[in-house]
Length: 198
DNA sequence: AATTAGATGTTCT
DNA sequence: GAACATCTAATTA
Image 1 (spheres, rainbow, N blue to C red):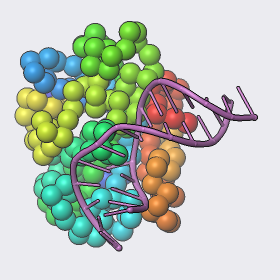
Image 2 (cartoon, rainbow, N blue to C red):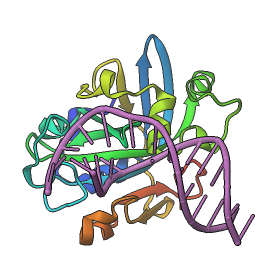
Image 3 (cartoon, rainbow, N blue to C red):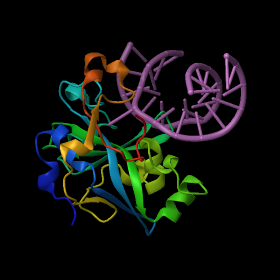
């Protein structure tokens, strides 16, 4: 069962980010189906968060989808190489989003190995925001602005985790955001090996 | 084990 | 031109 609009369009991005842990991310690209469990996420807020690309109304071609209603995919190119996948949340014009940072491969593993040019299943296959996108075939070209209730990319329901199974930390790679870099908005599943880093 | 360089699109200066 | 929500392979210690 796909997560519905009502899940994405709530107010609290941080809460949504937490609840995404343990859910499954599904992609169907070029007729190939893959599934992976979300193990690590980060929340970004469109207001009062210097780490967010769309902070305080910054509106460019790249950030445009973040201003759409919750339930769209925000995919952008990082360092000119990596496609990073985000889920837009909240109602239109708020520009909140959740970055998916790591996943655990569930289905279509042979396809992921091929896309990543790896010989065997190992941590490096999909634990990291750039590598997970490559494993699942997510690209800016195909997925930027896609509606998450369609049949190319979507997330399916799963029970929420207990707080005791979730580890909280500050976000990765956002030191330039001054005091906002300290926000405890990164969450990952405790004792799961599919994590970008401790 | 830790550090570094190189890949390179989009945005801002 | 510089910085950036990164990853990998190579080099140094």
